[in-house]
Amino acid sequence: MDKNRVLEALRTLRAELAGTSELDEASRGELARLTDDIERQVNAGKELEGEAGERLSGRLQDALLEFEAEHPTITAAVNQVAAALANLGI
Image (cartoon, rainbow, N blue to C red; front, top):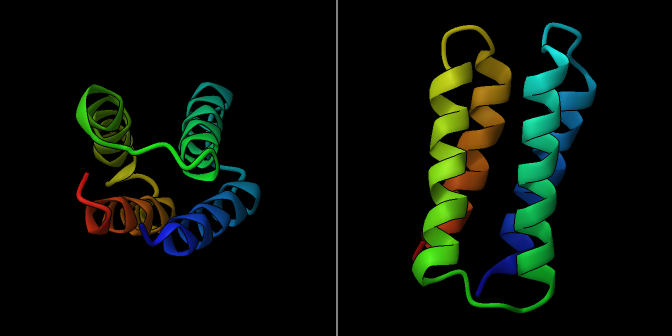
C-alpha cells in the first residue's frame, strides 16, 4: 500500500479547500468528511477493498462530478486522491 501517496494527495486537497472561498459550506463539509474518512482508513492500515473501498471511491467520484465545472482546482486535487486510491487497487 502506498499510503504516503494517498496522504500527500489528501494534504493537497485540504490545502485547496482551505484556499477557496467559492465553495458552499455543505460541499466543503462533505469533502472534509470524505478526506477524514479516507485518512482514517489509510492510517488504521485497513485494506480499502470490497464494500468499504467502493463506498469511499464512489463518494470521491461523486465529488469529482459535482466540482468539475465550477471548481477546476479542487477537481484536480480530488483527482489526485482518486489516482492514489486507484494505485491501491480501489
